[in-house]
Length: 334
Ligand code: Q9C
Ligand code: ZN
Image (tube, rainbow, N blue to C red):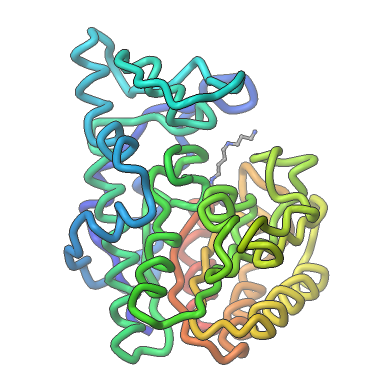
């Protein structure tokens, strides 16, 4: 399948994140993408579809904030990466905040998502990379791989979180539906629950969201991804969460994957967006599943076996030395 990678995504390079109570080096590094593109033997650059398909998913005030946050932070006399530290969980309401500190808290769900100088440009080109991959599928390719970075599945309509700023998979899914390629399903196989994608489509009956992930009772993002979250309103029944315990290996994972694929085809999907994270790998430094490199090939084969056109969108995966091989293994399964 064709692979898409745009080097403008490398401009995003935050220095540190708050992890388990300590400042640690930022895990979502440019080297991740460099390892993957090397293992895949290169990638075609993104085409520019402009802001409209991004604004079809994200709030316009949030996009303005993302574009300007780093400059505003520095104009306020700060140094380094912009990061929130006060979060409006109490009676949240749409205040028009002027201080960059207030905006950072209002538009983020954690302190793992700093804004560096190159963040907006990289996130913009990550979204364009997903849209370029979708264009290949829309033009008749059966499968396409979009090497997106920064990742997207924790980002909601008006918030960033979990190394994610723009929800690349949701942007591609929305565009696919607008092009009449639906009904569209998003299957999220990153180790972490895709709370942003779920939130964006929670009340939509036309986009199905299924996620296989570490049980949020033990793992980030904690507050979403529980099995009883199934959608609301017109979206009632179009969200499926399959949380799994720490230590899950391929046989148990495979059973959940089969259930998710059966639900997606049973729902009548005509196109699949796969949010693929390689952080289910046994050697991942921030995760606790036990998939081996060869299991990713079986995963790709099983997903291709569902018989739908598939756009693969890259999400997490932090075992940098094994990451290229793990992604190449998945691609081989298609
Ligand atoms: N102690 C993705 O894989 N930090 N994001 C968790 C747990 C955030 C992962 C801290 C992890 C985000 C796209
Ligand atoms: Zn993840």
